[in-house]
Image 1 (cartoon, rainbow, N blue to C red):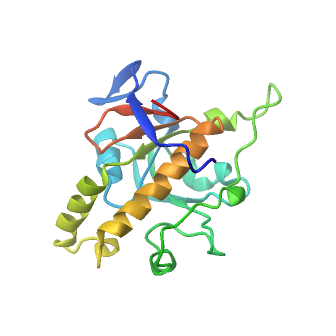
Image 2: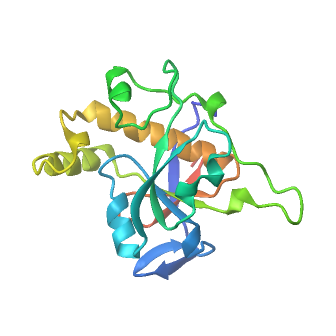
Image 3: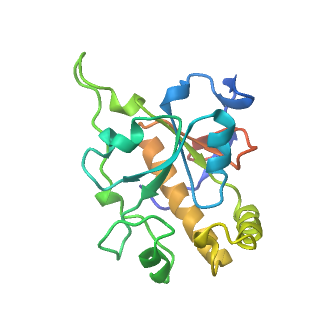
Length: 204
């Protein structure tokens, strides 16, 4: 992905209502995978939808991640493992190794494996098997949500939280949302669990 491409959003006009929440009109309920950084509101969305409560995980550098067992039950909250420039192993944004890296992390896009396009009538259409909803609040909102949550000591990922960590995690999720969308995997953004579905665009 061209790192100079800005991250712009606009509301999706063609929508439907599912369990009181707006979603893109073409989306099937069972296609939905909800992802985003810690504290963004993923679990809140899953509870409202009555989706699969157990969190899943996929390593985006792993061949055939799209056929992982963790994706078979949907709607579902999914944590992403990112290949990062300067780090050999793939990590989620809350892993100790990630946090210890000590710099703004850049996604190593060459190591992300993309599902194949459908070639034959009877082959699986992996590009349309899933729809990714990225829950991405603004940095200030997300930081405040996590600081408030940290006081309850319910999530260890909120310990020693800084604003720069929140910004770094959001930036990586934004990079990958745009990358997947550019490569034909349907992706949209919701700016918090109470937000509306937003389309990714490359310019105003």
